[in-house]
Amino acid sequence: MGRKRVLNRRAGRRVRSRTAAAAAATPPEPPSEEPSELPAGRALFREYYARQKLLSSAADWQAFGQSMRSPLPITFRRCGLPSRSAASEACWAEGQQLIRAFEESSGRQGRALPWCHGYQLPLSRLELRSEAQAS
Image 1: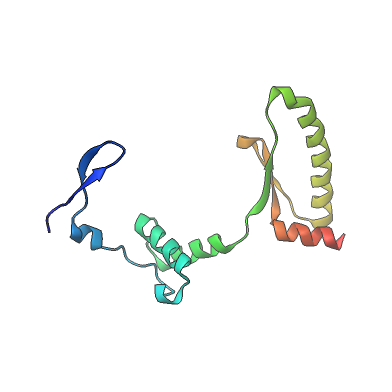
Image 2: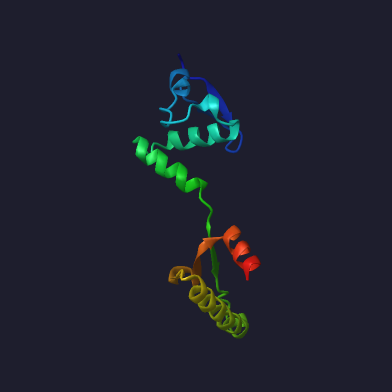
């Protein structure tokens, strides 16, 4: 049960590692699916987040899993370089016309992201492709 010393290659010195008992202790598994039923990558993913101890209840784990499986919305931002401001403004003006047309035809409203000079459309990449094919 003693501590073993391991060479830290970057620093060139020996450091103590965790005890065997601490290394063997695993965090509680997230509720729901058993790790044996999951593909290896998903089991490791769940174990990683379980070790972070960010989520405690089964409802939190369920909401987290659902969020991670949902597709990301389309998000883009404008170039803020002063040397490209004229081109950026021209593209942004054309982009705003396309966004307005999309919002009017679909009834779905996007949102501005002022912290990054961007915009987020309320649909995924796959939804955008199906909208384009339908038009």
